Length: 227
Length: 106
Image (cartoon, rainbow over all chains, first blue to last red; front, side, top):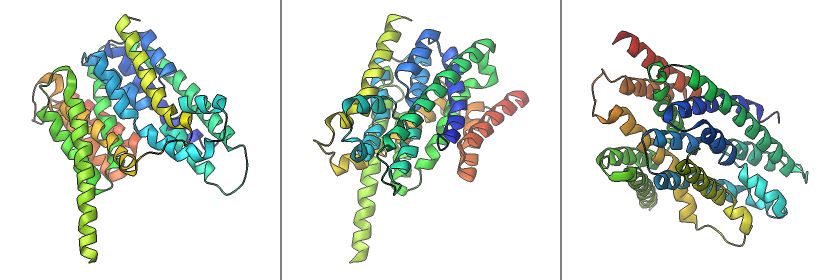
């Protein structure tokens, strides 16, 4: 719980911003809260709200959610060795509540040397704390967003691109990742006229493909240098 | 809540929980190919960039590459402070502040 505390505070403004953005996007209040309670995935909720505001078809929103959440496959693959002997009644809630933050603190806890058999309780505690915190501040943000008249002039609609820029930067620590982001950015401009915001899907695939290609090229170059 | 909102949330719940539970559910009976695991890490930067670039360069659907574009100015300030400080909340605050100042002055 103590390790999760800074993450609870860290998630607070995002939950507030999500609620406030959702209030202005045309998404109903019930849907905004239902999304937090049932989907519980910060970045996909942000993206979904942005896409709702841009009047994107439901199928594209769901598909984008799928793509964005594929990273959870990596998390669950990493945690799996620690959880595979637990019964389903443990694995289902831990899967539902798996987030970037809980993954980060749990992987740290599972990695400690002590042989405590109860480390999954730690993950559960962190999960529930993150969940309740998220619900509360989303609702607060929703109220706030409804109170502020003309949120556009307050710059709430610039919060999303600015937040995303801050989220992208830590990923850009290697050359393949930079290639990936640049390709996706250029592709998003070239595909802007595609219907149903299909450009988003095309650009993401182009970015991921170029990242993999850059990584292979880099590896080949290093091996050539070694010889 | 409208019908299309219900479909959207239902779909998002299905794919989100499906992905989070997939590997826990089968618990080690299948393994992910290494190339697939490796390519997953490129998804977040690709998606985030692909959403952000058009939102900033074409606010309200029209190309605007001038400094009169408050979204572009806010994005450039956020980018610079993000690279300099590597702190998310500071980056957001800098971008929002730049946007507000731009709105006041221009």
